[in-house]
Image (cartoon, rainbow over all chains, first blue to last red; front, top):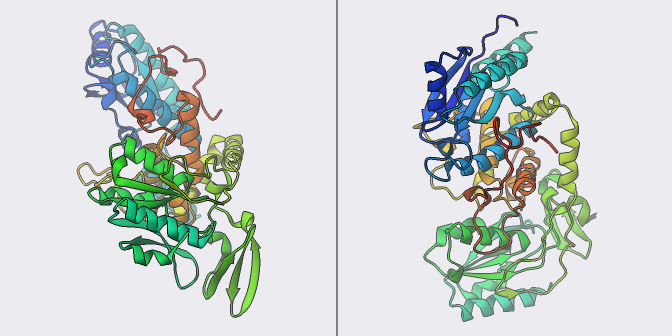
Length: 150
Length: 322
């Protein structure tokens, strides 16, 4: 699995994390190109179904990042996100999904270096976890088909 | 609990409050209870309440917003009503709650094949079934729902009228133990367990229909723009359906077990629901359906909430399966 290059979907909030990712680019911090960034207005906009849908459509990992608590552009969006995503994360863990499939982070607009570091860490985590076979429709079908053929 | 007490109290409530209808149960031909809507005080002679009731009657309340409605409510139903009030689905003034004592509800699935079986009567700690003139006395405790075995509030939390009688003692433990057993498994084994459960699901949505908290007019599962998942009962789609429904109920579910009893395939819904509630309780010390005027757990926040985000306060070791 050494040549496995994971696909990671990152939901970044417009005001902090997206700007943080931008800063990482402008400052030429190197990080692996495995993340596909989707810009959302606020981390509070992230419906946990986004995460499930991304995994279902073939992502190997999903990253959600927003402003640090207290810094939300809309005052409280990230506080709501924090509650929801933690409960959701607990559920995923209870279900037995590999913890590397879903990650939550706070990245501010000035934390370009931290963003690069986060992505490096996370990509490695997902590489160690291997490809997402447990939550993708096509692959789940394929795995079942192969099992039945055996 | 005496039948005439139930009848007279309901009749009194009906007249004093000027009710349009009363939600209760009546005996079906097999002796098991079925939900019934009583629209006249005279028809209340048929009203009945015993552990063979299955559906949480609060499910019907949001449909009768403009009516004055009475409802038979054991502990779980009264808590559902509190949540419906808190979430703005019904008005307190429109609902007349007739509290009933609850000894737990039986899980029909545990009785096996019910073809030709008639429920004769409930006694103190047992009940009698009849099939082809042969009678069988069964121990009530052995046939209770999982949710009732770990019910902390069997007696109604709020009520306008109360019917006297013995309630089951509040007990926790059954589902908590199940959760502990599950968390002792490895994540791979747990995923396999829940995938097997999800494979049983035929996506009839009986769980949603039986749930008082699933009152959304359009459900994510039927949304076509965006289409979150396919309608066909495929394992992964089923898993997403179960998981998202449970997530939507986190901190709102009173664990009445109505969905679990309604499920034709016996999918283990209760351990996921209990886990969701337990993690909401552990994270935010929140228990649903106990106080009128409270906001839902995921509809509010505190500055000092625990923070397990990367770059946040407490990142060392993600909280999982405590």
